Length: 372
Image (tube, rainbow, N blue to C red):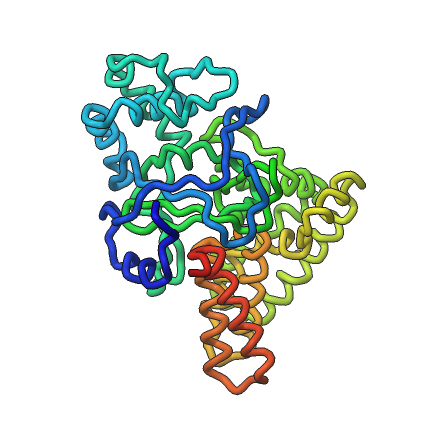
């Protein structure tokens, strides 16, 4: 690629429908492939990467409506170039790559023949898709939620391993996936991506990750293992209350969320010393981690309040703070920061409060779209 896309390019490309081919070349930043004994292949930074730094640009190998993805992949394998076919075949769930250092992935594993690449069985193709496909998550502002109608495979990004507090942020424009650093990433540190919603509790996340064939033991999961079962079940209890009694006061609900999350945070603070020291070294926001499990309830609170209500602003800011900790630079993080800024701007507030909201919005746009 001749240079990083500028802000004007990104804004124009937002009009592209999923599947539209963007006029930009694939790009690989300061990354290398590394094998992890318990995680398989992954991508590691070869130098320090600052928040917002571009790490990957990748066009889709295949992209389709989620219901048609299997059939579309079979058709793509028949016409794709041999290097791409070989890369697809050695993704998790496919043919094994015997190369010990796994660096041959960049060039397309040469031990796989043309016939092997073209004649993968349907079950193998579906297993590769189950473990490696991405959903194009978009914000529906009319409904105030996130949804994914399309799915696809982006070959090099498929090497990204999971973490419940990832250090990368992604955005889909047309057929293209952009990956940026969402936190300061040290040289030698693995680049991670969230395979499931970071705004879920540990039990829900582990259930979602089971479809990928593993159980997560990241630092966040280990910290949350210290939370009592009763407190882990509190978010689900509040959700059940909402379904049974839709007239619950948002203000009362908000206070109950804060109280319950504070109790969970107290449990996390009681985790083993080595975990707490690692969390401190990585600047974990323990309060936001505890609040993440209540994100859906916070969404309900925000949706039940008038946008002129000071409580609406407080709720949106709390949601943005939570996402800054568990899913920085995500579409939901951008959505919450933008809404908080709009709410601040629609009512008379101090210049300092408005400036702080504007700064948060600017920072999250940098994580998602870069600073160009």
